[in-house]
Length: 263
Image 1 (cartoon, rainbow, N blue to C red):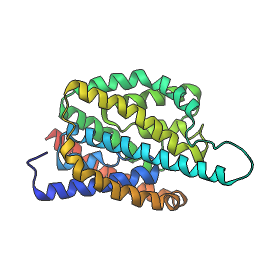
Image 2 (image 1 turned 90 degrees about the horizontal axis):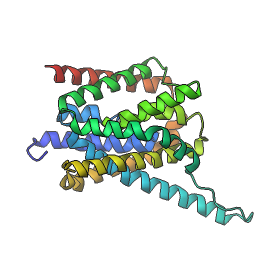
Image 3 (image 1 turned 90 degrees about the vertical axis):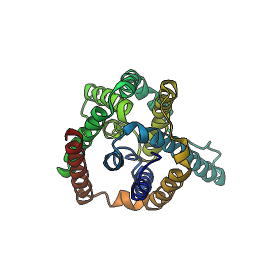
Image 4 (image 1 turned 135 degrees about the vertical axis):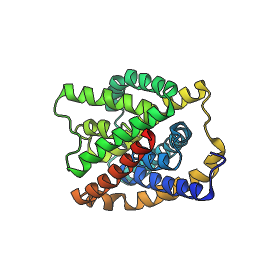
């Protein structure tokens, strides 16, 4: 990524601002809602996946720490003598991780050995399917324990290949976790899953693009701060119109991406 034009660097920086915004604003989507745009600028997934991974590790751990510190302060400020309750449901986290871990590892191996154009095609296809579900206002939902398991295994595999399995995982977790613990539990899960991916990157000798973190981490931080400020407002404004507009944009981007891969 050292020989790009100036406008390409500017576009990448703006996309990472967007990535940080949706990650903190929605609790997911830092990868699935930014990778299609990044691949239109530079069609090399293994350039961007390590950068996105590091950002997720940094901001997820920072958000969990800040939220638990606030929770602890509120409890210490009360006189009921009750111990502060964390914002991560660790018991449920380990339960779903046990289901996802093997598919996750299989996906990581496929990521490292898969040609870039095939990986790009997979990413654009998955994002296209997600976008259609947003447009139709019919997000993925699980309705039984068997479906839960299938969604978690599929989400684990997809997150292993491209970090964009979050919608399938959230379809399960959102039904079993209280709202106040959902985002931070997901952040803790992303941290564990991405740590596995980063270890695989290091083992395989993938370039982690460390020099580019110097300017892309601040860009993502700008979006992260904005996302934190509007998080509650976005939750209240979670309307079908918003997701249809988002789905339409993603569908156009994924279609253009697939055309560029096939040509």
